[in-house]
Image 1: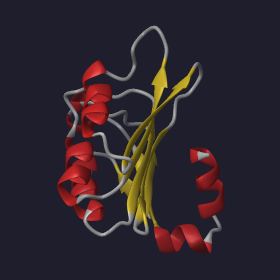
Image 2: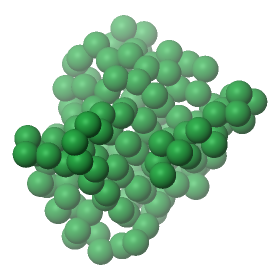
Image 3: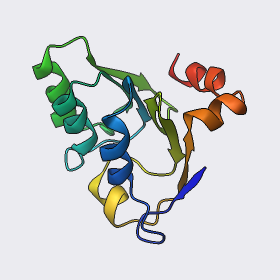
Length: 142
């Protein structure tokens, strides 16, 4: 397990994205808020042709920017899916399937990834398996 605390300990979500997207079988993202100033995760998946399923929040406050929804629509690719969930949906989970999972406080925004004090943990797939977390995590995405 690794503490991911951005500028505090120099463990950055972008570094996790660059490292684990190239090795994983797919990326599953459940993050309530996503803005178009933080597209690195989506772009890295597209660059590497890594399948991506994104779950974001849908309500009148527009927590997922229209530009992100458009990005998925423009892809026209079943390997890149955007699923919007209404009401009280508020997770912050990024799972690089086969590599590990980030569970923490960061939304998909430039501010969250580079400026805010956001704290979470990265748990390797081996640790997930040994703690029997994989099935529970799969339920988050079901």
